[in-house]
Image (cartoon, rainbow, N blue to C red; front, side):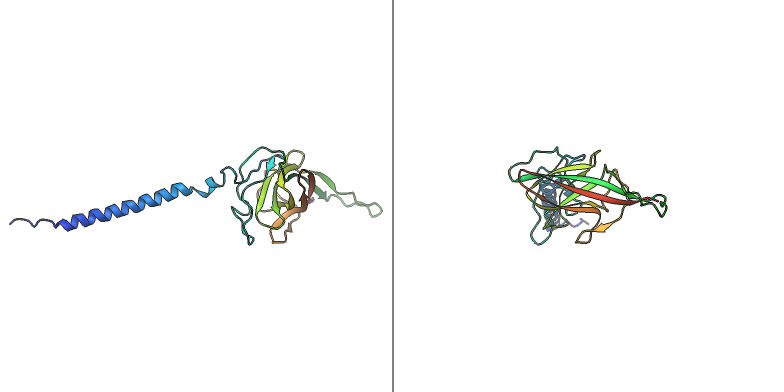
Length: 211
């Protein structure tokens, strides 16, 4: 008996289905290549810049309307770049970080308590938010050996702070903790108004309780 011949429509249907699947896979692959991973996009030029040891430059997309972050949000990655002189409409914010220590043996009753010990704090992570966009850091960096970090920022009002939940290479904790108005935990905070062509200073004092 002669075996039945396969119907032409069967293999043609399977071939057509395979072509459809192949086309769909090619479209998905093209979309993934064009978008790229989020960590790679955060390092593209113009996504914001910061460095360690007092050389920081702010940049990137402005905060989105309605309080959201245009890219990243708190702790968003910022690519390293050398410090730049302020351009038109920009100024310089110099942050000084210090520790203030209490503790030690109690003095006799007839003697006053010794004043707290203050010293520069190197290796502290510092972040800067625009005052009208909390939770969206516009610059971030680490203080240098003298406890300073310098930011070049567009003129405006800012909040600079030492976040508790972002690691610092030179500070492991042990200081009193406060809160920003939006509830984020910080070791210290300060407000600053940057003026175009000018320089303004802000001080962060971390209170450490010694045994």
